[in-house]
Amino acid sequence: MNYRGPFRVRASEKPDPVILHPEDAIIKVTRSCICGSDLHLYHGLVPDTRVGMTFGHEFMGTVVDIGSDVHKLKVGDTVLVPFNIACGKCAFCKQELYGNCHESNSQATAVGGIFGYSHTAGGYDGGQAEYVRVPYADVGPTVIPEGMDPDDALLLTDVVPTGYQAAEMGGIKPGDTVVVFGAGPVGIMAAKCAWLFGAARVIVIDHLEYRLEFVRNYANCEAYNFESLEDPVLFLKKTTDWFGADVCIDAVGGDAAGNAMQTLTGRKLLLQAGSATALHWAINSVKKGGIVSIVGVYGPTDNLIPIGNVVNKGITIRANQASVKRLLPRLIDHIMAGRLDPKAIITHRFPLEEIAEAYHMFSAKLDNCIKPVLVMSAK
Ligand SMILES: NC(=O)c1ccc[n+]([C@@H]2O[C@H](COP(=O)([O-])OP(=O)(O)OC[C@H]3O[C@@H](n4cnc5c(N)ncnc54)[C@H](O)[C@@H]3O)[C@@H](O)[C@H]2O)c1
Ligand SMILES: [Zn+2]
Ligand SMILES: [Zn+2]
Image 1 (cartoon, protein in one colour):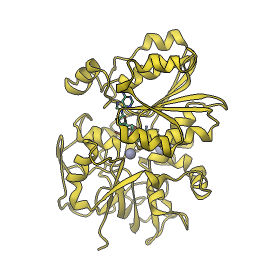
Image 2 (spheres, helix red, strand yellow; image 1 turned 120 degrees about the horizontal axis):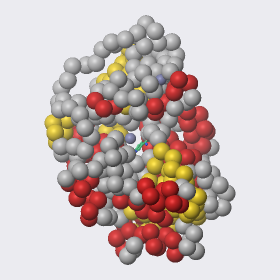
Image 3 (tube, protein in one colour; image 1 turned 180 degrees about the horizontal axis):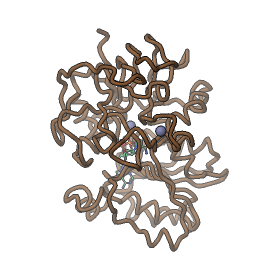
């Protein structure tokens, strides 16, 4: 795929990637998802998203070439590739903070490299393509376990670990009430995983009825439409005996709806780095001393968030990019044991040639779309 500017992507020919470094591998992509994070790029909200870039950070495929210093992979292996590009050797990778690698993104010291995610995330071309260059190939790519459904493997590149880490960062204790803002793939998975940590009550907030309906069934939780609530914060306080939730998870990020002023300043005028509506709701509806866990993506500059309330309520806020590689062993275990069924969130499949239609459908939330997958032709 080829980015042509906001709301414009198309399929076009680009030169095949080649090995540029001894630790590189070239992967022939078999499946690749479109993610809610890609929508921030598609909507033109991420700085330094250059025309000609290929998006795509959720992909799997077959190893077709390796550099001379790749030892754990061989040509012919079928692998899933975490969205984080991590060197495996720096001080942060050594702490398993693979989303914060210090080496893979020369543009920033905060976030590591990410496939297909603008030059602010290293400028790497992504996997919504027939072939992709994967740096540090001994670190990220993971051979798909025998017997695992390829759709499940595909969702282990981002959505499952991100939802799981959102729940993990929430420090959920047995008996806790957990509120998840956002019923996209990430929020759906966070709600599902909250139970694995012992939550007693899981509440999801969104405004798309079809997603609320899906998450109610898939994650066996309560789900409410914020448009039919006069004030979501008041509602959440009331339903928790005026304590507030133990844990609030922001699985929305800067594209949040629900507050006209935030939408205007954050999404239309771009005066702040996204709309902070879900974050406001999370901070204001968590109990005193509670934990706010953020996986929704915001721009790096200042946001108009209720920081005074963070202080006065003594809230712990935890946030990060998911460290996919750290979580893979336990998530593979959950999937193989049947406790997690990620593939159930996939609603649409498109050939790569129909990328423009796929982005439009996912962005405009048409046809009850939850998670679209691009399936490459087997040539
Ligand atoms: N930290 C990470 O590692 C990581 C990884 C993947 C995705 N993300 C981010 O997580 C977020 C969710 O991803 P996704 O793929 O599920 O996206 P998505 O766009 O499919 O879902 C977002 C959902 O939030 C809902 N929403 C909008 N405003 C809301 C509000 N005020 N309150 C509650 N819900 C609201 C939307 O209707 C939508 O259903 C995005 O910001 C994405 O960039 C982060
Ligand atoms: Zn993603
Ligand atoms: Zn590193």
